[in-house]
Length: 415
Ligand SMILES: Nc1ncnc2c1ncn2[C@@H]1O[C@H](COP(=O)(O)OP(=O)(O)OP(=O)(O)O)[C@@H](O)[C@H]1O
Ligand SMILES: O=C(O)[C@H](O)CO
Ligand SMILES: [Mg+2]
Image (cartoon, rainbow, N blue to C red):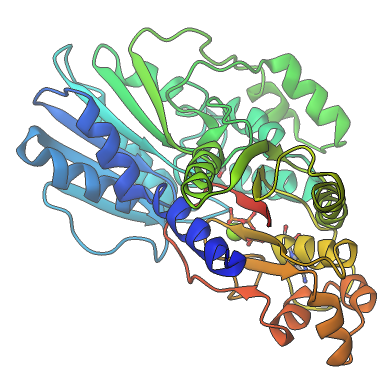
């Protein structure tokens, strides 16, 4: 007899553990042979933990290094490394100050030197030095405008890359003739390496023409000076970089699939780029569950169907919730009455929206239990109040902040 709920929590815990910064960095470093003279540059929300793991593993091979992370995200000193914190999501003076320090550290290196570049989400705000004539104030304004425009992260970073001396492959140029070895924890769906943290050490696939299209599409009101600066083209070829993705939602899904298999489920990864409205995703998942229960398609039961991605919520109500909680609450409607089924969805960072839950978990009884408590599912969804609804039926998944951030994991279990 399977305990679906117990299995769901096992899958969640083990698959997130697999992409914790420490584990991901160490596993990669075990597989490569870096010589001495290593200089660490770590940027992003996971920078401190990635740098600490690298230093603990490489020990005296590390000559020096620098960590630039978000305020509150460093945990003390690391021997031979400078630690800085800076503004996120809007860059601030500490962003510029610490980026200059990083440039100082790498610009006079020789051919025998290696920069171990540790990249995680949030890097775009934390690592920045604007091109000539553009000030920090300008960058703050443009960032704010972009974040509010409705542009997606690939589009936002396309613009940012063309205003920067370090983004879009420019940092790799500053490191020449030394080599850069990049380890990347991806928070961008599809793992586009030139988008993650705006790809400081990756050849840029976006052009000034793409920038013009984005400006038109979102009707961005930019000054003459910024428009002129945006004509700077980014490097399209780099000879000194090697890059590895060490954690991503794809890896989370693969790991979830492995664990589910081990627990005795027939397993399938349906997608790693789920990006529609959360409620729609919930309805779609419920339809898959019904297919399984009625026809055992696409997999024989017991089965685990796994999805990765990041859905979106257009918040209109004044309730409390997050995209994962809203997804599963929506799904609960479509699996009402079915036995031995479960749908779970969690943010790998352990924080779903402005709540203390990582996500939610529902089954065929959830809607009935809500009714018994006097909670109407449609009302809760319309008011974006998935948190309180799920809380009342033991449907929240609480992990606490996990220290990693590689989008969301969603899965179905059927028995
Ligand atoms: N009441 C609500 N119900 C559902 N979703 C909500 C609600 N309030 C906010 N959200 C959603 O939560 C999202 C923010 O969640 P969260 O802080 O987890 O973002 P994130 O994309 O994971 O960012 P980060 O990468 O910094 O973790 C917003 O995009 C918003 O749509
Ligand atoms: O920093 C950024 O640009 C985003 O987190 C995507 O990586
Ligand atoms: Mg989050």
